[in-house]
Length: 255
Ligand SMILES: [Zn+2]
Image (cartoon, rainbow, N blue to C red):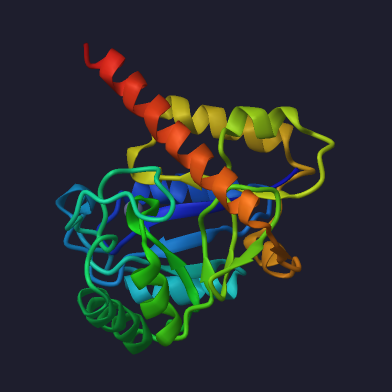
C-alpha cells in the first residue's frame, strides 16, 4: 500500500522544534503531507511554544508550505472538546462536535472557515479533532462547502454522505507488512507529543518505505469508490474494536 502522511494539531504555538524536525524528514524524502490547522486553538494542551512570529509569521508560513506542495485541512475550530460522544467514527469518546445540535455546530464551523479565509487559506478538507463527528457535522460542513474528510478505514478514498473520505491506517504495523497490496492509506502524526524514539521509528520507516511514500496531493487524484452498507458497518465495527483495545491497553498501563 502507498502511504501518505497527515500531521495534526498545527497551531501558531505548537512545538516548533518537533514540527521542523518532522518536516526535515518529509523534505528529505520529498513527501508533502496533509496538515490539520486549528483556526482558533483554545486547547491548553496544544499551547507549547511562543507563537511563531519570526522570521516568517505563522499564517505566511502556511502559504509557504502550500507552495511547497503541502495540503491544508481545517482541524476543528477551537480543538476544545464539548461532549463525550463517539459520533460516526467511534475511535474516541470525546468530541468538539458530535452530539451537539446542527446550529451549535454550524456557527463555530463557519467562524473557523472565516478565520482561515481571512488568512488566505481556502480549503474544502476537514480533519475532526479526536476523529469525532456526527451527521450534523457533515451537514454543516457540506453547507459550508467542505467536500473532504480525513478519516475512516479502508484502502482507498470512498464516498459517503456526499463527502469523500480519505482513510487512515487501522494499524501501521500491518500496513508496513502489506508491501505489495494495492491501495492507499494515511499515517497520523502528532509531532507535538513525539519522543526521540518516535522520531527514530519514523526515520527508519521513511527509509524502509521510501518507494511507497506519496504526497497527499497524489491521494487527492485517486478516484473515490462507492462502498456497500456492509463496508460502512465493517468500518464502524473496526473503529469500535480499536477504541475498546486502546481503552483496555491504557487501563492496563495505568494499573
Ligand atoms: Zn487534534
